[in-house]
Length: 345
Ligand code: AMP
Ligand code: MG
Image (cartoon, rainbow, N blue to C red; front, side, top):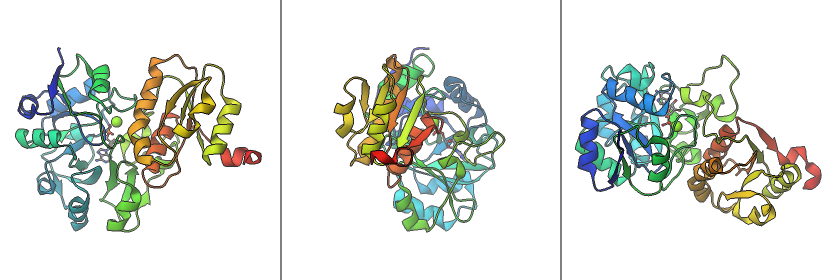
């Protein structure tokens, strides 16, 4: 199949492909999504095939606005509308009870469905023109870091899908925050582009799912099935070093092998001049770190590094999502520089 590169203005062409049951990669403010008609089981199955995604890992339905919630979800609580009012279009996915109209393949057989309204004009225009909810997981090959440019998508999907819509680089850079509204209190299933602190201003205390903070033991099942898979991982093994940034840098310098790679804050890059370095952005700029994190992880697959060490932001604001993606890329292989090497501080 020849994969077309469409311009952001070509919403009619993209909508036509979706209506005909094809696959189109769409830009969003978080990461690029691999879209299909979310109500068409055969079309949705093609997403799983193109990505090599496990069948039990459900997809997020992308909708035009909150007025579509009742079409696809049952028992929508007032809190869902309050959250949509405040944060949509934006990087918040809400888990709600699904209606029968949503096929099993879209929800991975669950009786719930994830719904989000993305904040990208091109994709909003495509959804409106298609007049369909667009099921779209991240557009990467399953297990690889997510795609934040159309070129990233081409790298993974060229020849496998009908088209990629180039909407420029993603403004947020990490996937949406996933909040389960079918439980009380609401539960954070995945930290993402909407910081927990902002969510809590609207819904009060939020419980954090265990799969967000640690590797699950065999037999443990996270509420977001996707959280159980090795994810975002470059080919070389990753070690994340948390704690004070100076301590983390010293720890890495002490332990890195020749031929190693480093993901570090801009301020520390000169320390690693003898290694392959990807900058994550300034230690003070978590928004930039979010935009950079997947690019940094993808970069190393074009190099021959034997191992990758990563500095990690603290878990406030967007730092929670950045830290989660780095730790998942590392299979939760994490060292706390503050505690392991107190003498350095
Ligand atoms: P991706 O778009 O690749 O980030 O994948 C979507 C994420 O949303 C995966 O981690 C899924 O497990 C999660 N997800 C989608 N639908 C649901 C649902 N109904 N319940 C829980 N998690 C979901
Ligand atoms: Mg994904």
